[in-house]
Length: 67
Image: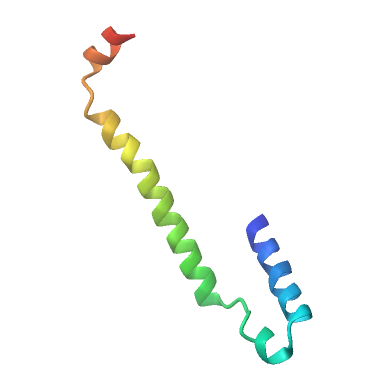
């Protein structure tokens, strides 16, 4: 939510600083937000699955003995 707010401020700043024809290129639309959310969910899922997969391959008895 904070990132979305900062993005809105950034887009507003770009349109305030740059000329109108260039500033019109910087905009937020639904497809961009959807793609960003999808990439974030996939990256988070993959980042969580890798340690889970590694931990599932360790034998519990061996792990208890090593501590």
